[in-house]
Image (cartoon, rainbow, N blue to C red; front, side, top):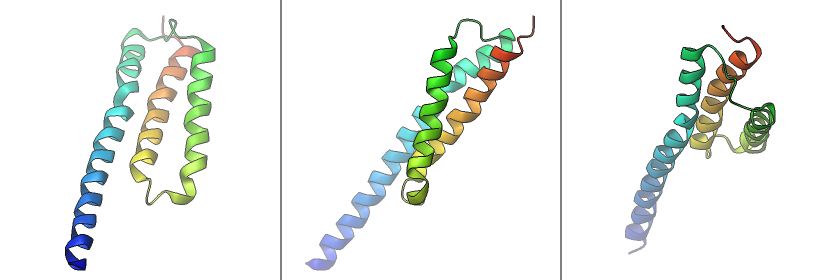
Length: 99
């Protein structure tokens, strides 16, 4: 009886982790269309600095917050790190537009 309960908890955790990874991956690639658009257009003129800076502060602050528990929170860490990559592309084209 106890073994069944433990097995169900492990299976549940595995499903929970899978759902967490799917959600984090989906959320992580949200910045991809803007990074691609900025790369194609060669600028990020339509985005305000306030938005970009708040986005960056949010990503870096959250990574700092979860860093100590990064093994358990790996899906979140993946999400935030990938978002920072996309954000840097957008900021690059905001700073150095290709016109």
